Image (cartoon, rainbow, N blue to C red):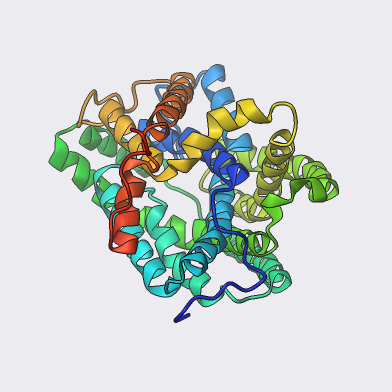
Length: 402
């Protein structure tokens, strides 16, 4: 696009409170998942931390796996795709060229993500969004129905690929070497408790495995969610929630039945049979069922946002969602100070229950801080910096009258 126009399919420019609230809700779920990796070097290796194997510890791990893992990054990806259409509309309203601005935004996200991955958390998602954003840009004129079909095919192909991989592992009798995995996790724990150089070195050593997970599991599912968000944005779906109540109810029914069933299978196998062909097969099942549960979460929240509880939910979630980038990075910073040698070096020393409680307390503080900040500033500090780079000019720093 050279000179952006405003086709009828584009939504009106401006903030959509339901988008901000959904983004805040997704941010909470992402924190509850990410903190499990930040608090233990064993998580995701195929073996669990031997210091925390009580029934309570396993129950918390199961609940997080069933209700949170692989669900909330999909919701966040959907919002990324939806917000893309809002950015298109904003550029059209301003009469500016969209593509150069969006490309600068993607380079800014990639740079932030690269620093984040090396310094704070190897499981960064910003770099993935920066790369997938190029695909979104190339496909931005795709019709909504085609976008939905493409997303469905992408999820189906990814699930089928996992099934084929599981069959190959089954025939080869392949599985994770638990003794080697445990030794590697113990060594990573010691490194992450060390000084800054030791922490960064440990992150760099983890990056190849994380990149493999991102490319072959997270990225295809995230791209499918981006396309669904793009289709929803083209139809301005989140500005016309009352017109979609019947669809939302269907999403809740299908999502909570099939999505939770898939989540239970995924959690059971991940905890009871990690690193086996059975687990790889359930990853393929999760690729199909996790989007359904994410959709059910979104449908439930959207219905609540148009009920008597709307004001309370918006007050808590929308400010955090408006400052999602700042909050996402600050979550990793706080957790790094808690769990690594940057600060208290508590990695491997707090049980899963305590880790989850920390996540809830941290998000509560972020929600309050976001509301306080946005009463005085139009953007979060990192959002302000990214917007300055995107537009090549700084927006106002404070709200009028402040």
